[in-house]
Image (cartoon, rainbow, N blue to C red; front, side, top):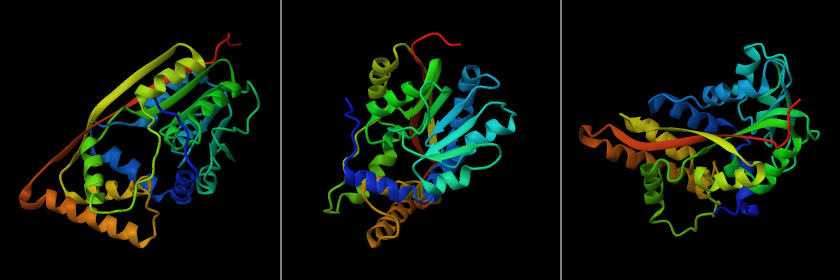
Length: 276
């Protein structure tokens, strides 16, 4: 079971990573362009969330990142409040506008009133919170009775070939890797049941498919922070170059395509109690 607690060193790495959203944008763009079948986390989340927020409910996206989901909802003409919450000042500054409210804040201490939210989203961000249990309790606190909590996380052991590629490039490196508590659909499920009771879930499975080495190397390099390497350091640059060389080797002589299984789950839970 995932304890859900991040150490100070890991939190520092995450703060560094999301001070600039470039690597996040790289990961999202590559998953959109190279997934078979095509997957769209934002649309899958919206499809489930629209029924709980209605046309005028208050929607909060915690870990809003680039703000793309909230902008899509605003463009649809949603009449209620659309609120983004993120620890990254870059994310807050980039999301504000178009009728969207954005606040600097943390999933474990949400700057929101009790019972004020119809639908709260946490998409691919529970990996990065200090305490998953506390984050779920905070979500329950701010939701209205009957309000919906929607979480998106990867399935256990998703993209195993990508993980092996990264570990292989670290195998000759004596530096210890940081410990990030594992958060996936298997160990999040019981935490959600403890926090909310009944839950619904929808699973999405597919593959990453690369026919040239460059996007594979770029995706791997965008994940180096989670192996303890801050961008801009000499060691990060050397490891990114090693990944490019290994990706080129994998495609040498016309080899390919390179395939890797992936999967993610959307969970929907509701705060206990009757809605309005």
